[in-house]
Length: 112
Image (cartoon, rainbow, N blue to C red; front, side, top):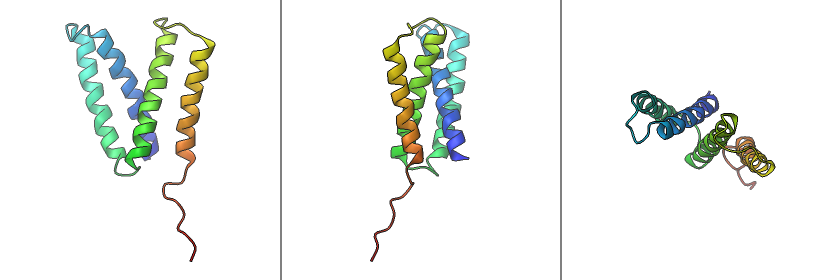
């Protein structure tokens, strides 16, 4: 469950980052309100995640996923160009996130 919440929180990071950019320095009401609500929900969800997943893994996954989704959103909306290198680097971020998910939470105990 914590991993699902982590990815939802990361998706909300994309929403609040995009809303922050659209708020025009907090002068536009709707994006400012969307930013305030989504950052609060995202951080509360992330705090829940930290009870179940180590901070080093959770934070790397949260920021990596949020960054990748934000760039993908920028490309999907035409705000950023779609290039092969961008896609390669986003795939690298996704690969690292998957790798962190696949690692065991704790290293195996040494054998006596």
